[in-house]
Length: 100
Image 1 (tube, one colour):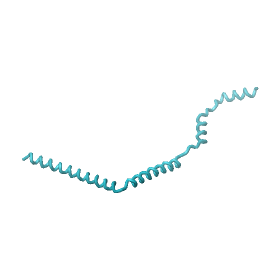
Image 2 (image 1 turned 90 degrees about the vertical axis):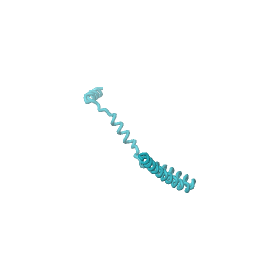
Image 3 (image 1 turned 135 degrees about the vertical axis):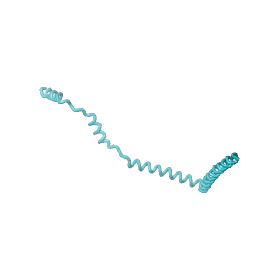
Image 4 (image 1 turned 30 degrees about the horizontal axis):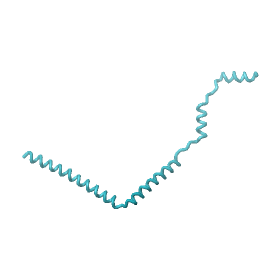
């Protein structure tokens, strides 16, 4: 009697799994029918258009991207490497030049 209850529960569980599997197969079948209803040429054309639209988007994004201001960059680098002369050396150098 206990074996029959376990067997019935087991069969119920299997039935639920098979039912879910059947629903999944039905969904795949519906999707396949939808995909097969569209011609291959149309799918290829849509893919080609999608690729070209992505390329156009990349090009327009490049145009909108920030650009390097070469003049400002060179001034920035030039001033970054600038080292002020020590005060003592500049006076000594100027005195030496005036005596000559």
